[in-house]
Structures are given as structure tokens and as C-alpha cells.
Length: 138
Length: 421
Image (cartoon, rainbow over the protein chains, first blue to last red):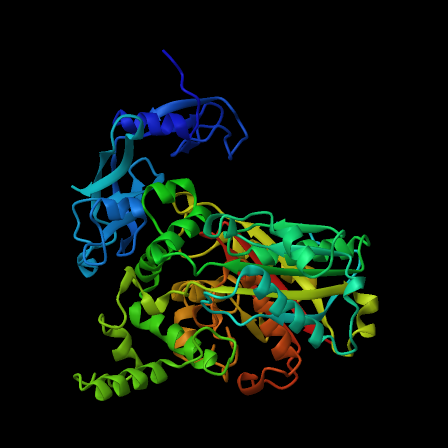
């Protein structure tokens, strides 16, 4: 089996295949998402890919009313804010991601700690196709 | 544990300058830096010959993106007649000029140079808010950008984590904003030199004048709760939680300690410097502090032999209201989780026991990102020398002041302690 380099290009490619992948250090077992090519625990450089099951909980969030041009193009604006957040996965690591299925105009109703599951947002076409990591309430 | 650091030769500040901060369609980076440079020359009590400056270190973050011009070191060196002497640009996002300051310290402490000009400049207001938001996001980490976090968004998420851990809420953030505006009202160079009360009065007057319904805000907090005047930017960060888009420049003249008295009888000695770096949001174990700030603080306290309680006033990097609360905890002024209560009790006000951001902070003084680090030192200079005018803090024997600068989403943090002897 092909072993992809432990970098952001591979991480992105896995996302486009609807897989959330991290790297585990062979030597000490430390686990990183997104992947690292150098283990910051033991400086080991031998890694293996491990797939994340995709369940976690919300640890922090924000509802963004003034977003970058890419989000404005998706239809988000001051009246329709989107949600971004920090998610703690069952595996114990954290990722930053877009949070779907929550109304960004009602931030008071969003609770820290709610359970979430992974989702992959494919945007653009052809060469511009990009997959964004997202989570949605269970 | 950090190593105990030391400088091989002491360094002192003998002059400072700052342009007015604001949004200026008719002023460019060169003009702004000239404003700061000319003021700096006028603040050197016994005078200085610019020919004696050995080198320039200049902080700048986003001019490449916003005005499509990079390589600002030699451009500014030429502006002030410094060529062919060396000019080096430093980049640490919003902490760019604090890095310039640090490089200047090292250059003098090593014995290589005797007099160095350090400063920063930024020209941001010629772009739309969306473009500026996108440009600043270049200092976030790639995963945050991809998750569509903006800068206000990163600090918004930080605030939700702080609220969840310590039980604070939006009302506590408002105390920071109200205080910043009260201080900036007394700072003629501030971008918003008005109190929240002044803004309310102006709006009420305007409504009366136009024959529109007159707003009935009872106090500042009711004004800040009004979504019509204080809309969400990135929950829970609202407009009045966020620093503005600004143009500006600032600079500081550094000399070897043994030469300081040739230029002024009241130099400020650089007794502590520290710098740290930090990870992105996803890699932080706890979102309610910045490890880079704590590291920088430890380094600066270690070098100076001082403790947090010895620092009498400080400028801290309040790019967003929540940030000020977290920094005053990370710098050891208040315990973790108690910063918001200290602000609520008025301890950080101009007349409090630990005045913070007497200039009005980034929120009100303005935040031309590359100019902010040395701009903070300008305020500490004024306060420690008793030259802060109406906003002079009423502390007796004011000798120790400090400045904390943060770049990106906490990727670069610096802490500097100054002493008047």
C-alpha cells in the first residue's frame, strides 16, 4: 500500500476522500491531528496513518458575521453568520472545523460540550475542488 | 524550566515618537513614519544627531498584501537619510515592531552597535473590512483559516472557552471596553478619543437634530447591549470588543546604557525582555491562556529580577476585549480566572492599583499592527516620565512599566519591562 507523506497535502487528500486522518508515532505512540512528520514528544520520525472515528464534542465556538470572501460567496453575511469551532475528538485530540446544522444567528442557544459527528464539505469543481472539515450535532 | 538570561551590556531608551493613529486616505507609510521619526527627535532632551544612528530595525506585517509593496527596511532607511547603513525588517504579525525592538536590544547588548532606531509602520485602511479581515488572517495558522476562522473569530472562540471555564459573560467584557474608551478620551493621538458616554451623547444629539426617535440608553452597558449600535462581529465579539483598522507608525531610539545620560537625564532602562511562541487553537490543551505570553513573561521577569507585583502599569495587547482579561492573568497581575473580576472592581482603571492600557489600548488608540509594539512603549515612556498629561496615573514614585505585544492567534508574544531610575 502506498504510504502518503505525513503532511498537510496528504491530510487534505484524505479529507477529499472523506477520511479524517492523523499520524501516530511508532516509537512513543503520540497521536497528532492534523498529522506531524516529527513527533514533538520523542522526536521520532517514523509515523503511521490512523483514521479518526469522527465523533467528538464542542469545546469552543464562534458565530462569524464578517467572514472572508470565500464564506461570503457561500451566502454568509451579517444577517446569516456561520459557526466555526474547536472540537475535541473521542481519541483525545482536537481539531478546528466549521460547525454545520447550528443557527449562527442564535449563539445563546449553542452549548459547549454538545456531541458532534464529522462531515465533509466539498466545495468548488475540478482543480478548485476543496474539502472542508466540518462537524454537525449528533 | 527556562535558563536565566542576561544581556552583556545594558540598553536604554532615550527618545520615542508616534504618529497619530487612525484611518488616513491621504497619508502613506513613509509620511506616517516621518511623523513618528520627527517626534522622536524632538523628545531627546539633550538632542541627537540622526547621523549617529547605526542601524534601523523596522516591524511591518501586511503592507505587501494591502498596498502591494514589500521590502520596507530600505524604503524607510532612505526616508530618514540613513542609507547606506543597514535596515532590517522584522515580521511577527501584530508583534512585528516588538521583534524589531528586541533585535535592536540584542544588537546593542552584543556591543556591535551603540545607537539603533527601532519602530514599525502599517498602512491598512485603503482596503475594505473584508479584505483587511482576509489579510490579517494570514497570521492565523492554516487550519484555522480553512475552518473559516477570522481573527475576531479566534478570540470569540477563546471567549466562549473562558466563559465556560470561569463563569464570566459578555457584561464583563464590556467593563474592558468602557475603561479603554475612558482612557482614550484623554489621549489626543487615539483613533477614538471619546468615552462610550460621549458616543451615546453624540448619537442622542444627532437623533434630536434629525427629528428621529431618541435612544433611551440608561448607561454604557445598555448602549453596548444594543445590537443596533454594537452588532456581532464574531460572537461573542461585538463591534466594541474589537480594535479598529488603523494606519500609523511609531519608533524608539535605543542607546547603550553607558551613553544614555548624554541624551537625557531621564532615560528608561530596558530591564526585562521576553518572547515566546505558541501553537494553534487545535493544539492548545487549554484555550483560556497563551503559553507564549507566559513564556515571554517568565523570561522578562527572570532577566529583570522583578515580579508581577513590581510592575506598576502595563500596556497589553487588547486586540479584542477578552484578550486583555487573559493577558493580565498570563502576566501574573491577577490569578487565572480572576482577571475579569479585577476589571469589574476597577483595579485596572487609570486610578486603580494596576492601571492597564492607559493609552486606550489597541481598542481605542488604534492598531496599525506593525506599529503597535513600539507604540505601546511610547505610552510607558510618557507615563514613567510623568508626561502623560490628563491621563497620567496618580501612582507615587512610578518607576516600573511594561508592555505585552501579541502576534497572530498567540503565535508570537513579547513582554518588555522598562525602569526609570
